[in-house]
Length: 209
Image (cartoon, rainbow, N blue to C red; front, side, top):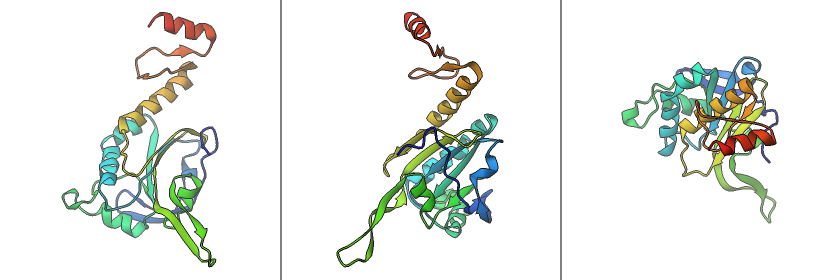
């Protein structure tokens, strides 16, 4: 079930802040009424595709911040594993230099509530609890507005890395909608024409393109 248009599930879990500080209680609720949030899941620390995405978000962090958006990452690893990875140099496979929060979800409840866990629990014929699939998160990305409502979500399979520029485009489109009351057509980018959300507006847009 999609979360778009619904309140983002809240949680209270450990996280690592500023690449160096473990906090035992972190929640997205702190941003409600203050900031929008780009909340993304990745499968696992100390892997291959994941650091490229995490570092790419860091490289674009100033672009998100100037738009009033807080970037937050999450995986099913522990906060101790996050911290170890955050303090490992890039040359050694680490993500040293990442400053936005990384949420720890070893219980997998956050990933489950956001619908991105790449597997599920079940019982075998003997009644023993088993897990089918991968006990990690898919590459889910959720853009959450200031009221805590999810406005965009994408979920990639484990091998498929994200385009961070597309996440910025989504933010720009949402801001344009909020500021101008227009809707954004396919391939819209900042500075391009949008459309009025009426039949006449659509006809006007099509006649000019």
